Image 1 (cartoon, rainbow, N blue to C red):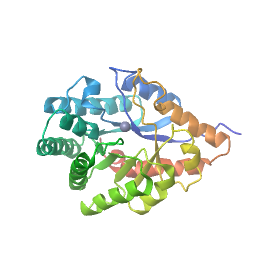
Image 2 (cartoon, rainbow, N blue to C red):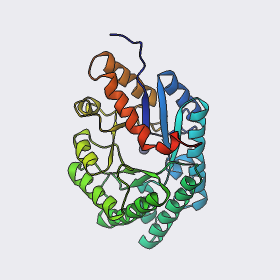
Image 3 (tube, rainbow, N blue to C red):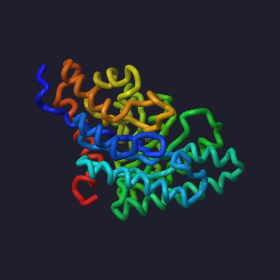
Image 4 (cartoon, rainbow, N blue to C red):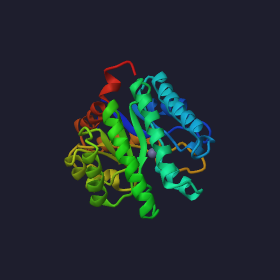
Length: 291
Ligand SMILES: [Zn+2]
């Protein structure tokens, strides 16, 4: 099998953190060396960069950190954009620490408005990761997260942002509930990304106007995804944390896995090229502006 034609690879969802791992420059350098072409950096948790939940100043620092990561990737010759926002885990932490529901909701809405400003100013391409905890938190927190989520999608439509959603993995039920929220918020089709989605529900997500983003590192799931039409995008979900090695794969492993899949004849180059182009059109703004 020929190794001559490189397959273009776009990692749709990754994190970098020089405080716990390699940092964006080195992550980007390694990804590029493995054949990577594009990478989207998403905000971590406020406390993963040393902040405290519920602190507006730390949210600003978090967004700046994410923007810097994508600038570092561009400095290494990659296509890159920042997705800025506050993780649903922050809602859970704040409720646990005694914040009232309304207080948490007002705070989260503020973080969305701040993210909207970043996108409007051309410093970020999307909001994320917002959504719902993937662990059991009780119906009140879920309802709170859903209200935030609807606001996220509505604001994204206003400023032309892509949205990365962190969700529980309850298959069809999860897909339908997100599609319903997107419909209520009048989302633009093809801009709401289901991050870390199960391949088996990717076709349904696509059919309902959502963007399925398949994690390549999860055992067996990449292979499962290869049985689908190339209707999805791929992600490493790398967290760049030395204390949690192996939790997810690094972006360069994603590039290597894709190259090997082509070499072994599991999928064609044109199959992966379509996946690359799906990501390209998702971040249209990145490619046709100075961002
Ligand atoms: Zn993530």
